[in-house]
Image (tube, rainbow, N blue to C red):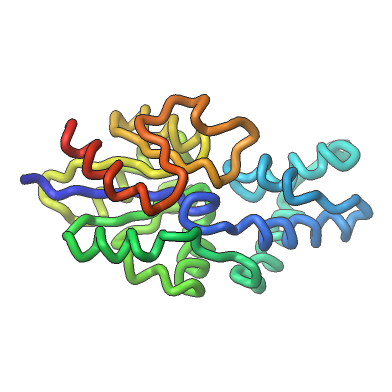
Length: 224
């Protein structure tokens, strides 16, 4: 039987990072005289990287300044976030139990995210989750971001499995599109970060809690 790979999104799928993303974004916004974002705004803006989060935050709090260049604010965001990366971030309920079971049964596990690779590894290390994953791919790893399927393929490739079959687990339209572009099944969680309910984007399976994930994973692999 070919080896099986499960590739996870990070923010809003594995880890509830919204509290720390909100703090970092508001650190930048308050420094330029803007109001802070509310949690529901941050949760709707996450998913396309920190630059997008910042520009959407500026647009929501008074608009983009003329000839705005995000890079200086992006550096301030990354500096603050990297120093406070796990102050309020936590793994979603049931995740560790799922990862322990998948690892014990020989699944290859990877992360494919639009968070920078270094920050992703730092976060996973801080939460003692890195030990479960054989690959972590960010938008800077290949210079390409989701929903392009190449980061997903790279996450699978680095697991060094024999003729792997793979699927995606995510929380947003970006993750659904990544899976579709890669030609693999996708499981969606409803507790992540998306401006519209993720079920509207047509995942192959929806789970309400990670307690339901193993059965969904086995079911999808049985259909492949």
